[in-house]
Every structure is written in structure tokens, then in C-alpha cells.
Length: 160
Image 1 (cartoon, rainbow, N blue to C red):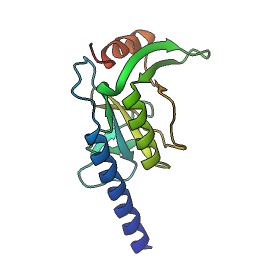
Image 2: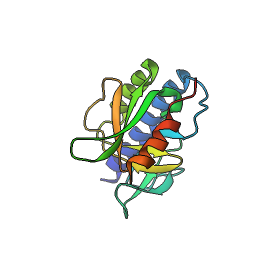
Image 3: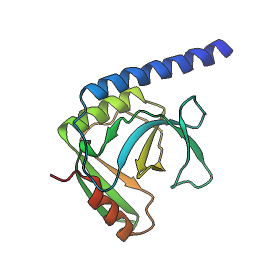
């Protein structure tokens, strides 16, 4: 059992290293946004050099966030706050073409693992990736008000 856990840890570390190298190679550049948006690998299990954080959408739950940024503001084309049909406040993020490719790569590497969505250094949510993501849009939930979400959305997309 211990050998299996060590192999799983090694496999996860190797996958994240490969993903980090690949994503760094195709990074789109420095963002000049007012709101820091990042996506990282995450886990409920502590790992060396991973930052301990609390989930904003699930108070009391601790996650550990990998230091490598998989996506950031430079991967975002547009960000819009709105309410869904059920009244839940969310931000819909439209990725750039390069960002959509990077999101697809990240979701394949992190399949059945957690992906932390961070706003200004705080983990908004850290869902388990259940399937490779395709397309160029996704939504973030967990905001206290539409006004808060609108303010954050305005700062996420890079200024052109």
C-alpha cells in the first residue's frame, strides 16, 4: 500500500511538472488586470511546498494549492457577472484561444483531481475535474452579491 501511495504521489508530481513546463512555454504574457485571477492544481492532502488555504465556497474545508500557476488573467478574453435562472451569482469567463488550449491541457492532466480557482490570492472554489474541459467558457460561483461579482469581473480581463 505504501509503494502505491508513493507511486501515486510521484505520478502526480511528474504530471504537474510536465504541465507546468508546457504551460510556461506557451504563456501569453504579463497581465495588467486589477483583480488577480489564477488557476492552480489543488488537493485535500498536504504536499510539500503547496500553500494551505480555506475554500470560500465551502467554509471549514482546507485545500492545498500548488505553487505553479496554470492559467491567469492573460488567458482571459472577457469576464461578466450575472445571476443564473436560480438567482445564483456567478462570473462567466471567456478564455482567449490560447487560454482555452491551456485549460484543456490542465483539465486532462488534473482529471479526477482538484483545480483551484483563485481570486486575489483566495481560493473561491476547488472542484474535482470530472472530465476534460473543452470550449472557451466556464463559470465561477461563490460570490456574496452581484455587485461584488461585477467588481471582480471588471478586474479579471486584461486591459487592452
